Image 1 (cartoon, rainbow, N blue to C red):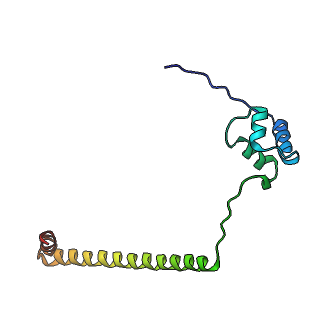
Image 2: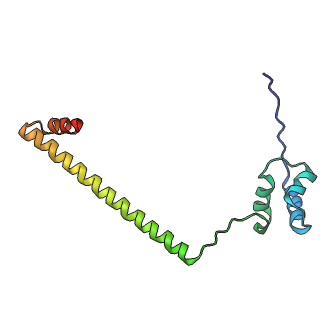
Image 3: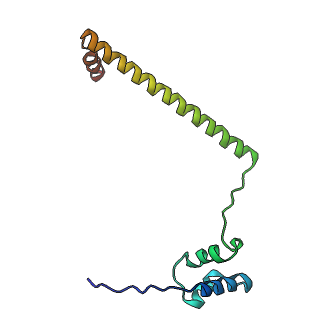
Length: 123
């Protein structure tokens, strides 16, 4: 197994600003700038643009929705919230009932929990 040495290239701030200025003012594409100056790394130039340039050159993702889609999303979010609340209430009620059974079993020593577990396993 060979252990190759990696070369780490550090660029000066003035060089970064020069490249970003060329991209912004001369209309040089990010790909062309990376080829011209031998800059590797997919996000290197985008990071430089974020830091030293204007954001209008970076790709942005836009989502366009009509009112029906927005209303449907809101409706689904409300329904999801209601269902989560109902599930929470049901889980809490189940825990309360299990605790009541456990306390009754301790108090009256009837073996309720054992009988319930046997009944469930048979079905």
